[in-house]
Length: 298
Image (cartoon, rainbow, N blue to C red; front, side, top):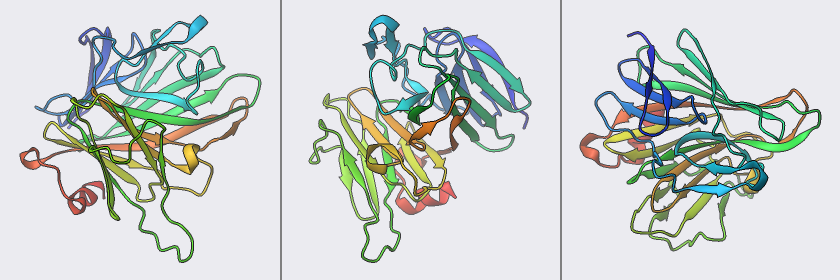
């Protein structure tokens, strides 16, 4: 199958680029963002959350209003105001080269350029995703790249726990935020996996982070399984007590997040996160067991 793309307006997000290989379709905004505002297997529903009501926003003071918009985005960690919430509501530069598509936002007021690169497979429901933040200022900048995929209602995230043999040393790190209740019914953790569900009837947010050394995480929704294959865990400095994956949820969406190295990036240096997204059908709409998910991620 060949990869193709076209421009069209989508909901109230303006002009978007829709990329497809006949098995998987992505829709990426170019009037704002960028955001991956649409992602679905052929003939299936969009799995991305789309904030048409602009419900989720934050006033970044002199820099203006930041809007979540939904979908997949790129941020800087740690989460601080105003830099993390610098508005990204301007048009995006788009470039297509074969089956590789690059979306680059204008330079932020904090001397950074954010870009998303997608390499669409020609014969699989799979796409490579590279998230880049370049320090274009004249000073070193301390941060970590932060890739966030905002998925729609009804999502259930499954993250395999680390089972590395470590003798007398610890092998698992779990971080909770001050608003996270460990007895939250949306959260379950066993020796093999952690599961976090989105529930529209529970408005209180919940977030947890983990050291994921298995190289994948999964989200099940709308009869589809969304697999994120991530770069192997390295013994470097990550944010949030050295966690490289995080999950946040509230009454509207679930975010599946990946973090890169937290360090001082020199002028001209680029921070990068590499992922592979793989989408498969969830038979009967049921949540697959851990073994099935592991095979899908191989």
